[in-house]
Length: 291
Image (cartoon, rainbow, N blue to C red):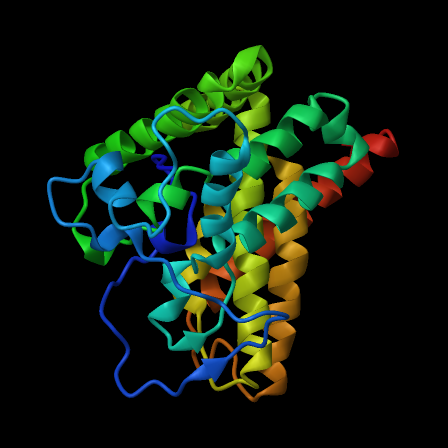
């Protein structure tokens, strides 16, 4: 999933330089992560070149949903690459990320939810990175252009929804069409639902960033990711993000760091918080009938 705004952890790294001598930060998971790296396939990339690396690839003419479901397992075991640059071991998978995003869509405040098809937003959050089951989590340092990444993802979705689901009777065909359409809606980013889910994607990133920093006890600065908060479009999501950034600011203050003792992203975070406070003030004034 590629957008002009960079909706994915690995797509938001502004400085791809690998931190030197960075301590390893282990994040415990309920189950061990088995890394599946689909981006290591030799060029030219194709769906078939990826399938050739899988021990038990799906049959050419599936008769059940099982092959599709087995490929989805790769989303559970493929880690989000952006964090691995910081030696975070056993970090979140692609499926982890999409799960919390789907829950976030259900929590939209009334001022936003009344304008949205929430069920569609939740579905969009659950499928927006589905192509990465074959493409993998491509990062800027991989040297894959936005156009090429888009091609790989589009072809992967065609294979998953048409090549697999589309061959399993009418029910599979209809389900596949629905998944493909909502994925494309996210990619096009034109509807309010798509813009909301893109914003939620960024919010989920900021949440995970703060959680990794806290678990590392102040020895890990992930502030280079904060800038995405300033790209959030919808005011309601910006308010959520401001709450998370306030928490981060307090955490680093407790570690003796602030704007005078720089931590990456604090200035951007402060600007987002201030903007959210101004917007909240306007709403209070409107509610009280004042200007």
